[in-house]
Each structure stands twice: as C-alpha cells, then as structure tokens.
Amino acid sequence: MVKIEFQKKSSWPKLAWVCVVEQGSETARVFHGPMVETAEKWAVEGVWDGPFAAGEFDKTDLVFGSGVRLRPEGLYFISSATGMDRLWHAHVDNTYYISNTLPGLLKVADLSLLHDYPLYSEDIVSVQRKGLDSYVDSIPSDGANIHLIYYDNLLYTEKGLAKSKKPKKVPDFADYTAYKTYMEQAAIAIGGNAGANQRTFPIDMLVGLSTGYDSVATAVVAKFAGCRKAASIENASSFWRGSDSGEKIAAYLGLDCNLCRHDSKQYRHETAVWAGTGRPGGRNLTVLEFPKPLCLFFSGGYGDVVWDINVGAVHEIKGGANEMMGEFRLIEGVFNCVVPWWGIQNVNQIKAVGLLDEMKPWTLHNDYDRPVARRLIEEAGVPRGLFAQRKKDTSSNSPLWWPSTSSSRRSLNRYLESIQAPGASAGKVGIYSIASFILNLAYKNTVKRVGIRKWWRPWLTFPGRKNLFVWANHALKDDHYGDHN
Image (cartoon, rainbow, N blue to C red; front, top):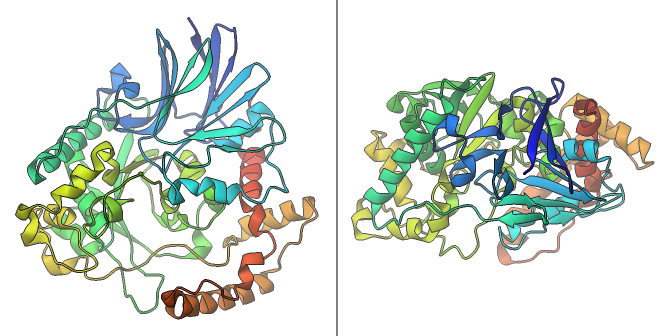
C-alpha cells in the first residue's frame, strides 16, 4: 500500500499542494504550503461537515477546499464541492502529478502552457457555459495535456488515476422545513469542523454581504455556523444603481460589518485572479479584508439558479467563473464555502420547494423572485423593504480585459515582450477602457435587446487578451513556486 511523504514548502502559498506519484512506487510525495494540515494518512486545506480529527473529508458531499486521503483501496484526491474550485492533474512518462494549483503543478512537473494557444480562457469557462458533465476537461501544454476536475474526486490505484464520484448524503427536500433544517445542521457541523481545537492553524469566518437575495440568505445560514463577521462593498459599479452596502442588514442579523470600497487600483494579488480564468470577473472579492491566518468565506454564488423560481429545472449543474477565487484563495488563505451548493445533488427538489403553496407569502411574482431565500431572510428578522429591491452591481467585470494594478500591468507587459507580442501603454489602456465601457453599455441597451449580435467591439482584439491566462499562471509559477525540490 502507498504511504504519503509530506514536504512543507514555507515559501509556497499558504494552501497550495502538489502530489507526485510514480507508478510502481510505494511512496506518494506531497509538496505543500505552510498552512496545509497534515496527518499520517491525509493532508487537507479545507472544511467539511464532520469531525476534523477523523479526516473523513472523502466521505462527504459538503467539503470546501481540497485534500489527499489514503484508504486501503487507494489514494483519494478530494475536490471542493462546488463548480468554482477544481483539481489539476497530468501524467508525464510514468509519473502522475495531482494538485490544487495549476502554476504549482506546472513548476513541479516542469511543464509550460503554450503561448500560441488562444482558447485557454474559453476552455476554462466551459464549466459555466456547459456544466459539470460537459466542460472541457483538459488543456494543452508543451508536454502532456493537463486535466482538470470539478466537484468529483480522483482515485489513484495501481491501475492509474480515475474519477471517483462524491458520495450522496443529501436528504430529500419535501418542503421548506426539510430544506431549512438541512441547512442549519450542515452549518453547525461545518462551523464545528472549522473551529476544531485539533487544527494547527485557526480559522475565522466571514460572509460577503450585499442587498441582494443570495448574499443575505447566505448570511442567515452562516450565522448557524458561528459566523459573526460580514464584509460589504458599499459602492456599486454602476452610477445609477446606488450603494449595495449590506451594513443595515448586518445590524438586523447581529453581524459586525466591515465596509470596503471597490477600487480597481487596490486589488490584492490581482495576477492570481487572472490565473483563475484569464478573465476579470472575481477581482472585486480581493478588496475584502479576510481574517487571518485562515478564513472560511461564505458566499452566495449560484443562488440565482438554485433559489430563483423564474429559472426552470436544472438539467446540468454549472460552475461560476466570477466566483472562482482559484489561486487567490490559496495565497490569501481562504476556503470558498458556496452555500447555494449545499444539497446541490437535489437541486431540483430545492427549486420545487420555492413553488409550493406554503411559499406564497414570500413570492412576489416578478422577474427577481426567490421565495426560499426571502423566507430565510424575513424569518431571521430582516424587514422586507431592506433587501432585493433591484439588482445592483459591485462586480469587477470589464469589456476590456486588462490588469488594473500597476504591478500586474508591468508583469503582463514584460511577459508580452518576452514572447514578442505587442503590449500596451497606460495611455492606450485608458482610452480603450473608456471607449469599451461606453460602447458596451450602448450595445447592451440597444441592438443586443433585439437579438442582434454583430457590433463593433474593438476591445475584443486588444493586444494581449488571449495571453492573459498563460501570463498569469506563468507569473505565479515563477514568483511562488521556485522551491520545490
């Protein structure tokens, strides 16, 4: 039977790990960052709904983070139970490399992404466009293809590496009480795991809070886990939509709310966000002040599908590109606990609850209607007029894909110069940013509304756009994973 040999790398991101297994060898080597928890038969960076000391994160469908677990039948690699995190793996000669970090895997396996492959970003976001059963599950490198897996686990045996389904432990949801009870009990168990005194590194909790349905309902659930801290971005990205601050709501929920401003010049570890998808979404999360050294972060991603009665039955569960904290969370020390994904294997039962007669007092019959979320919120004491009045926006999405911080811009331009590709001056980026914002706004409010897709969008061919994913992952590979031998 294979045994695990751990090698801590103090200079690596807090939560990163790469496992190296040579076929025929009795030892699996796990290189890991300084805050990955290890035991004789497992390593984990995550929380789950069971006792921490038992290390049975492989036996649940509620795990947020990732890990390695040795069992008699083989070596399991556990992925987060969302479509916002993933594992990477590659088979080079007779060696398997499995990891929660792409740049770390590239470094340890001595692989590089291809400078001239233009579809990395499209491949990655296919989990959002197509879903968990249909996404592109491999990308090219200068050697072996690199594979990725969402939600499900991997199992290594003497026969090689294969997908392993997560167990199904979610109950049936016949009514609202069944669903709410499940959420409460899961939150209590997850909170107990996060606060276990057997942990070497303490975990604090934080919930992202706005005035929208999903974040407020998530905050209600997070309180059952013991979360007492919220963070809110007070300024909306749109001029006319007003503040999206959840400060007043936090007061009703008894949460201590830290207000942050969305300032694109202040994104932390911005390169790490671009490494997630090669796209700008998700950078707004970097302005939040996550508790240290580690943070269990409750978020409401996918609530617009799970809880909205205007969205029909889910035929294939999809991930979310804007919630992919990816390499950023490994550096920052964050576990992305996406509450609407709890019980996702019975997603259509959850959706059916929202249509029951008992939910009519919380049904508005408009295009922004989430009775389950509304009932959770209002029964927790938040007044009806204080939330979900209209959709607001604090996102970092931009039609012009280009870094905002000076350090990331310099890094990108150096990379483009190294591959003899055109870069962009600050002046050119500024002009294109303004033009792209105006033209994109006009497009969305005119011809797109009548189904016309042709529109002059010069930012789609802006220099470097197709290189962002490669640049960011190679920059992290060089900057964070130099020590791996």
